Amino acid sequence: MQYQYPIIGGIGVVTVLVAMFAAQQMTVSHTENDIIKTVDKSPTLIKQEQILLDNPDEVKGKIQVTNGVRHLVPLDKIRSGGPPKDGIPSIDDPKFVGADDATFMSDKDTVIGLEINGDTRAYPLSILVWHEIVNDKVGEVPVAVTYCPLCYTNQVFERIIDGKEVAFGTSGKLYNSN
Image 1 (cartoon, rainbow, N blue to C red):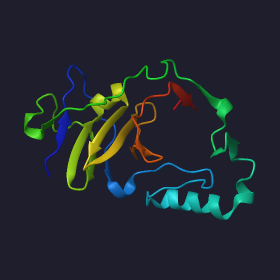
Image 2: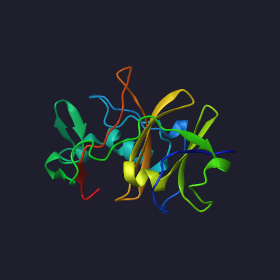
Image 3: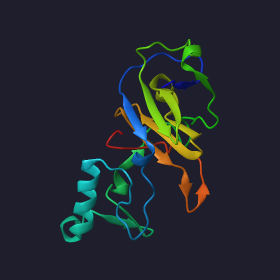
């Protein structure tokens, strides 16, 4: 498997996390009638989803509704993280090179690997630590590859909402410093 790397110059190396995502693990948006709607097959999310859907009385009071959208995070606990909205610029038109041509990286650098429909990409954390979001198309699927350097986590989202392709950006907000 040959990885491709985005070309972004002048960024240091950070080795924190290795995560591999396939198309069947992408989270999708939820609707007003669903608490969680996901195609992620991780046991933890399936268990959490089942608890929320099967026991609404047990989680009553924990789920809040704002403008018809259900959420577990109390909105009054979301604070400014310093940079304003889109103050950390996303990468919206990534350029890629083959692994042999990625001389700005070493074999020890950590990447987020993504394969969809036979199209394989690698997103170096040394770049994501500065941009946090890459809006890309992988295997003809519009995706947002995200990374939080504060909590060392990443997720990949499909960028289709209500049938339209959208671009993700940073909110400038934090919840529990993440």
